[in-house]
Image 1 (tube, helix red, strand yellow):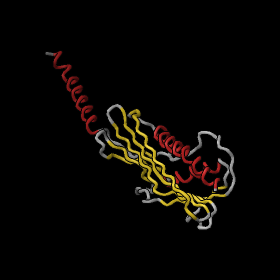
Image 2 (spheres, one colour; image 1 turned 90 degrees about the horizontal axis):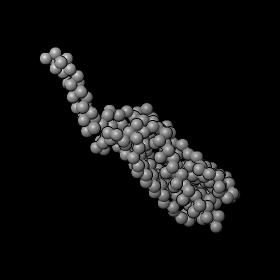
Image 3 (cartoon, helix red, strand yellow; image 1 turned 120 degrees about the vertical axis):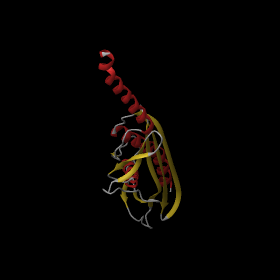
Image 4 (cartoon, helix red, strand yellow; image 1 turned 45 degrees about the horizontal axis):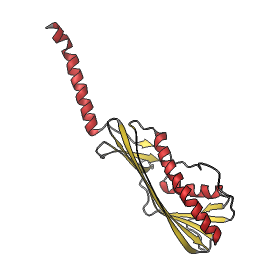
Length: 212
């Protein structure tokens, strides 16, 4: 009887822990807002050098939301069932992030680029970024997290005041990451998606504006 009496609390504790783990798997751990940086850098410096002035502007279709602290809400942290638990936040907006990436790419290609709001009607070369959308969703499971990034925007090219062409960019990234995905891992996903988008977009823009 002593043996059973001595170890009964241990068995009960083990049962409680198992129950807690089961509940955690069903509803997910309590989550808190996570802040990530929206940064950009070119993967290489292999572009052929060009010259000339380019004005860049942006016209977000719907401004990104901010929380009470003035931080941009750029995504959602959910439980395993996709129910929102917390927000992904950043100090800068996706609109600013995307437009500055475009400016950086063009400057690295040799152009003299300036941000203009609104786009000057008489600009010989002008680019207007519209339809900007960038949202990351993280669904946290028991042992891993599923991430999904949706990135899309348009670049309208104006030559001597006339719209010459509109390029549409759409990128999707779905992957499974460790449950405790770090800030750097999420930032890497965002960066790679925008780098891939620019890698496809910039050569087409250069071909168009240098031909006219």
